[in-house]
Image (cartoon, rainbow, N blue to C red; front, side):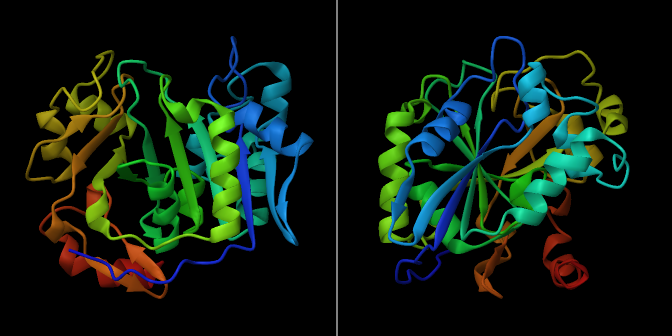
Length: 289
């Protein structure tokens, strides 16, 4: 279960995003918004190569709210359904249409403190190997595969979910990391370097069928056996967050269909693609997308 190491992938530019969830009362927290402000005030560049930065949901940030019409995560799940919302009109289109640098980083902070210094990185089902290289350089060991977010739209994007007690919660640790990444490029590490989880955001119907309404969980601790049945998974599934809607399961090596790049990307399954049908459905799913 390895992926051949290649020379470091050179980067022409890096773009850092923050404010995906606006600025809820008390502030969004985490390094995202301060990091974007720092990068704008004190640009990181090496020759023509540059680290740029953008605040995603400016209107919600100015109003001090999480969103205006709908959580931006919902727009990524169902863009057509929310076409007439503020979240679709600006932030969603802005991120999808203009995110063209060679590496995109969306910075979040976890809501729960119980995880301690346990950071996570989210990548999409179609991810470029060098994107995993940034995760490795950041010192993160746990990857969650989910297409709900910018990383689902762009194979060269990663969502970093920073724990409250993490060293990555300090922007002084981000600036040298970004400078080194821009200067040296990124490796394409072996998948064996990480623990990889398949992920699913439950629909309200699934949430009701599983019976999670109003229940609260500790991350990666409480088993949700009904989720396996509803989603067609033949092994244990665990709650990822305390809102009772996100579930994950660790991927076995045989679940990861393409351990070597195909068309310059890795193909990693989500929770609903597991387990026994994944090997048969991957080629058709890939061709349809």
